[in-house]
Length: 271
Image 1: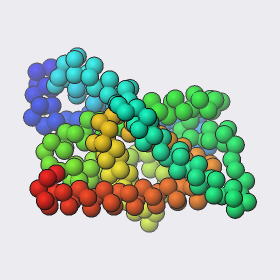
Image 2: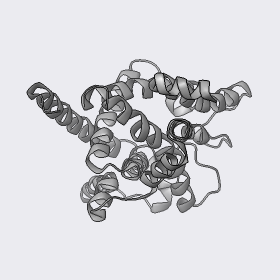
Image 3: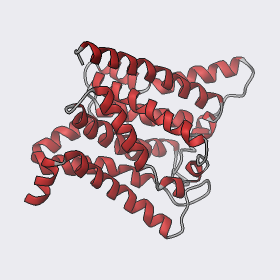
């Protein structure tokens, strides 16, 4: 254990990434080896692998800081900071933005989706109710990813450099971590080709906006809820098309503003 602790202390980023990738990829590669594919109608799900970053963060925190540090980390994962109303509004802002787009589509005569149509979350288990799917997505996709990328890795990198550089670095690691999903998940396989550039740009923009949310609220739960609610708006069947395009464009615009502001502060020496 002393050797592992020394490695995490001396090379925290490399140690964390190696552990997070190992936890996620071992599950995904096992599914691929067994011939499973995540697609509509399939009983296979990639969602458990999404918890790798969170589990690696818990393990890394325990190795370097002990049980008290783990308790503090978990508290940040499940507690909204004050003012709670503002934190909740930020956490669920993708739902509000998506509702506005749907409202506009309704004014144009488009049929609005039913609530049950949102129970088409990628990797959701067949037969689950919408509340069950929401809880599963929040725990595995939201907290599973954000507990690691923004809750652990981002602050670690930000202590060594600027917020902008840390956010971009997390984005690069985040992109690479997705690699097995381009084989396992049919919706991601469809991105292979020129469209993968758009996916990478969207992921970079998302990394910047989620980093801004984390630094503003210091709450892992806020970024986890934002991530999950955004996915429900753009990755489920009702969100395909206009909603996904509108929200993704908004995220890119906000990310550009954040990057410009952080760069300006860095240039002034106050970031």
